[in-house]
Length: 444
Image (tube, rainbow, N blue to C red; front, side, top):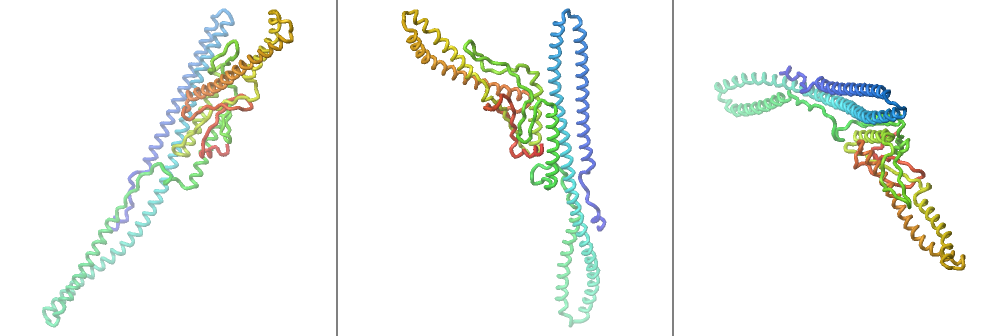
């Protein structure tokens, strides 16, 4: 029985099995990365083959202008395809980095959970050792008591013999009954202690470690600070990679991403001769494609960081269309055109009135100026109001068009809203809103 009590407790799940499963996950991720690299090599080989075909085909053209136009068209198509493929590769790389970060975090959490379980097992083992030592002493005492009870039986037999031989010991049966009752109660108590000793031999195994899902089983404050520092370093490294491409510039303090190149939209005309619809359309979508993709990448990086820091956390953003309040606008152009037309009307009206029989040019000019001013004031006011409404609607439509373009490149539509404001220059920028999770950008 003592050897059974000293046997170490058995664990239900071995640490090696858990490490094997983690290594299998990491190997699968590496194989998927190798497949992505092979796909990229195949795409580059197809691109080289297409360029060779373009070179051989361009030699058959007669004029240089035709050859140049065909080459420009082929290069444009190839560039558009490359932009799409690069966007897919960036997305795959970002997903791969996220998976590596998740596996790394899972391993760290599993190791910390295993360390806590080992400490718990050590405490349980020390308690079990102390309990076994105490029960060993109790067992030795019990064996001595059992030996003493055997000797007591012999003594009782001797007393019974004395009772048979000597009548003056008639009061001894009462004393013996008392002794037997006491011995029976002690035997019952010893049996209960033996059963408890046997039950204490088996220690229930602890449940296998799992990733923490609530703040109640979070790591200590030092581990939390280390995890936050690692998350900040990873986030800053990924954002620096985006800034190094020189398409956009993200500032961690203001949480604002500015476009380093102009977002060229097709011009719209408002005038007395004709007026375009206040719609938005790209002048050259291929030129703005890298900037839009980098904005989507920044949104994805910040969303992953916030979700890692706060379970259920989300990032929102605002696409701001800033209009230069000191620049020349449609309202000013309409006012200038109206003033020119009014001046022309004033200079031509007296001659027509004199032809009708008026003898005084000064009187005709005064009457013409008064009527032209009254009629022109209402027309100018109406034209200016229409121009202001058209310009505001054009700014809103352009901001919404840029938002739709970003949504089509992976940003959640519910998390991105447009806004038009007056500023010191005409530009576009994106404001990100992280709330209390902005700590991930500390130091960037």
